[in-house]
Length: 354
Image: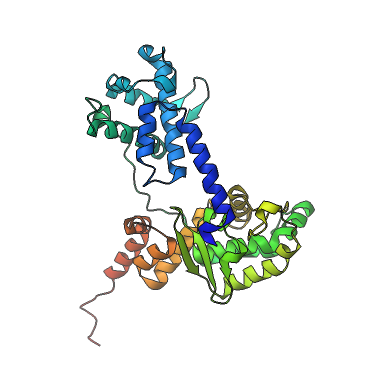
């Protein structure tokens, strides 16, 4: 059923209600900016934007004497003309590290993300001439380096993590073995599926049993942006899924609202994103201890393997659901480097002609 499933309808409703709750806490001019993005931006992204804007206004009201008389919701549009680039820089320092009140610290990537809705809000009002100046134009954002050392697993490590699920690993207690035995087929199905299709953890969690077609070996999934897509799987995935569906899943007594979920917790609820992350890290820690493996690393492992086999970057982008192929190109730049190194020895004019 994909995006028309009960799960995704409830998820959309919950996100919409959460967004409305947050927008009600914002000043009117900030709410106008959020509303202007609703057609083109996912609710989950707008929720993050709203949290980030609220954090900024709380900081300004607590630090700027001229604003302390206002409740956040009552802040007038005119205060945007009072905010300077120095205020933004001071806020950047606050985001980087604060020991006053609730402790927090953020890296460059997180700071850049938290400043993004702030930059958008100022630009929105500046372009419409609602404000006279845009202090964000004078603020240098953190420079982010592209990481070419993407963590992936090789074939040996992939087999090691699957073996850990199927046969256990050294050092497991009897209690751990008993628990793992109860979820072995489920965990093996999840890992096999993610390693052989590259789906995101959220896409895996949202699967219903009716989204699996064992005849044509396909999955109907809902992508990160909310669009529906169909991907195909091979015999290994089909075998692992069928084994789980016919055994462990058949014994589960699901709660009513999650009756059609593909993957369950032992409590009969749709498995959570956190639970999938924990099971991946649990088995990876014992079988691939030298690498920090997360569900996203399973995705990059699949993307790398697919690109090495096909050499088709557009195919990788399509299968992984990247809306912009530049995302794929940037992410797999390290593989491009490998191809360039291979080219260095591919041609030799000293070798005789064939």
